[in-house]
Length: 370
Image (cartoon, rainbow, N blue to C red):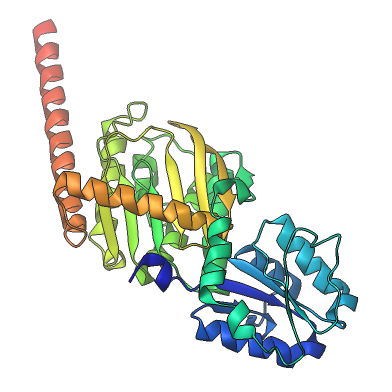
């Protein structure tokens, strides 16, 4: 089955409660064409109502407002339409009866016009039409971004957005590339010595460690439940921290890959990645991509977006790259985790050998001087 056939496009249905019967009919039809309708019937308890509306719209593949005489008089319907337009969510308005859509707000959007019985709904609202509208907005220039300027901003937002998706919606597949991934962050208490080891004795501060721990644990919750793909570079030297810090980081990644949490994880290796490259995709719920970075400063200017249509394009590109890297290495997706575990153990053993050799040379040099 082609990838787009299996995608359950999320369609947010905006309506007035006086038009509930029409909205329910549209929702049921969306389910029949293998879409995932989002409306206030599916909202979670104990979460803010306006907040959920904004998030459901921002995460939608398409926005479907039901324009009726009643809904045209409801301010919140206009606000939802305006929010969807501001976030470049593809619009699929349906006008029912003799209602007149707001010409200023939807002047460039062709609406489907149906009678009050919604006769012809099956013809105008097809899966192919939803797919066509989404595909038309798949270019990244449609996406609306939030920028995490610093490393700490990035790690905080990664944890918050990942938790948000899990709490309001469901766990999702993780795709991540760059350095050793978020899964080389220790999943240990903040007083554990591993936090000092990974920074060669330099203390980055409790706040930074706590935020990193939040990032690791938030993404692990998704990885435990869903297929996860990571592209890493175990050859990084971490020169400014030294071999002990490098060993600590490789060991943390190894510990994760050998744990039960990593049963759904596949790994590819790319030793040619630019140092600043970092991309995180959590399902098609959000993407976070850094555009600069340096050792000790971390990834900076990370652009976050929830724009589902353009994230699909990034998922396709990521999976193509991942499959090419596996083919070049002669690995299969099924064997990739065990192959990476073997590689990490080899890197750690080589690092220990080099450390012993360096120590021996220093001792011999000291003896000659004496």
